[in-house]
Structure formats: structure tokens, C-alpha cells
Image 1 (tube, rainbow, N blue to C red):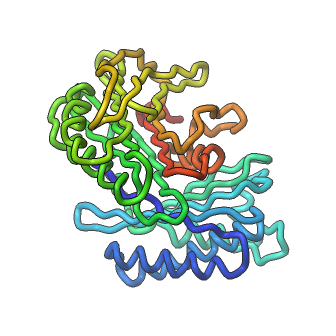
Image 2: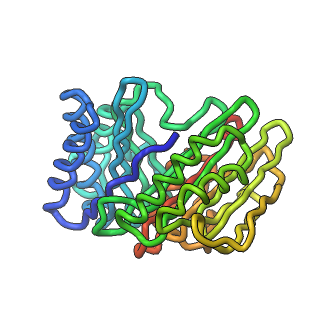
Length: 340
């Protein structure tokens, strides 16, 4: 399964919370949320955007609607690089304020959301994730075994995204793909869509089978960079195959293991098609990201972040390591049992 990309909205002056609210209500209504849920979305986005200005000195709101099993959901991410919170729990209590306001913003957001999650630390800024309309449903592609979070954002000025992502699960394997269509805009999005369709056609968990199917399917497009990771939960191994600059890594508290991709363009040219096998320790997480994210990032300056949800983690990586001159994708996945 896969999900649409996030819609980014810059929030750095007083008129922009109103725009963010209207855009969020529009996306929620198009997705099929009920009127009451659309109202909750509007309140949450307004409070989140105001907090970006008051406490974060500006930032960004990301909005993504998705649906499945007859129900609709919207994810809201609010990202800032401000001074962060010393005590998130205290900031959640009504009446607590550091900016001379009534101090009800985060509390109101929590009451209006089906899920609210926050990562913040002194000097590390703040990321707030709110989900409305989800109840207890897992997001697209998720499984009871694996917890994944994906942030996909198009380059500024584009409404279509040339990056894409897909995942699926069997009793013994979890398979993830990230694709980056060459360039950006409609042509890149067409290539990404073809790659996702190829992924869905292949019934095996072999990365080379998926790459080969995508290579044939993308010949009619401008081509793409593409990587596939297949986790074997029984053997505790990851098979990884990639062509182009979609990076993959196995990240644990003690180690960062880059995985090997080959040069080439899926659908047009490739030096070789080969997969590699890596250990999958119990405390590991999988990171895959397009070249819209710098390859030189780590989590050592973010206390406690590796224990938080994959979506919060992906949002922090996007916020701090996006190149801002291309579509950007970050996928983080790990076994649910590995979380504390």
C-alpha cells in the first residue's frame, strides 16, 4: 500500500494560519471526513499554526489525507526549529504558557485529535503530529508487526510529487520501496506511479523481481531511481537492491549500516542489477530516503528520538535535512516490539 504525499504550507506570519486552516478543511472535506471532523481539523490546524508563530518563530504545516476501509483520515504535522520545550507534559496542561497567551493551545489540540504525539527537546525544535478521523486504524500499508512512518513532500511550487513509496507484508517478510522519478512535476510523478503499480503486481518478496518489473514498466517514462528492501523476520536479514540515488540504511543505537545501490536509471540504463544481504538486529530501524534529503544526517543530537514513532522521526529528518530543491521522501520502519 501507499499514501498520498503531504501538502506543505509555510507559516511565518500572522495571515498564514488562516490559509492553513482553509487548506486543511478543503483536504479533509475532499477526503470525505464528516462535517464535525472537518471542524476539528480546522481548530487543530489553526492552533498548530499559531503556535509555530508564537513559539517556533515560524515553521511549516504538512497536511495529508488518506482513506481506507470506508473511513477517511487526515494527518497534520507542525514543524519548527525554535528553542523547543523543556517539559512537554507541563506545556500540555491548560493554563501553562511561555508567551503570555491563555495556554490552552496544546490541550485543545489533544482534545480535538484522535491521536496527538509530540517530539521536542531544548535546542531541537518541536514536531507535533495530530491525526483526526483515524480512531484505532493503522495507516496505509502498516502491519501489526511493523510500524512505519513516511514523509513525502513535493518541491515548492509543484502540486504533484515525483517521489513515491509502497510497502506490503506477508507472514514472514516486510517489503518497502521508495522511488524518485527523474526531475519533478507531472513527468516524475508518472514514473513514480508506474513504479508503484509494478510493485503491486509482483507477488514475490524478492527485491530483484520488483526492480526488474519496474525497469520494464518505466521504459515509457522518463525513468527513476528506485530501491527495495525486503526484511526476512525469521532469518533476521534484509535483502536490499537499488538503482540510482535512493539511499537505504539500517540504523541502530550503536551503528549506521549503509546499503549498496548501483548507478543507473530504472527504465532506461543500469550498470547491473544486484541485491545485497545485511543483518537485521532486533533494535534496528530501516531508513530509506530520496536525494531530496541530504545523505549526511544522524540522530545523535536528538535525545530520545529513536524511541518515538517512525512518523515523528521521519518528520524531524525532513525538517532538518531536506535540501529544499527537490521532492523529498523519508521512510522509517521498525518492528513494533522494538519500541519502548
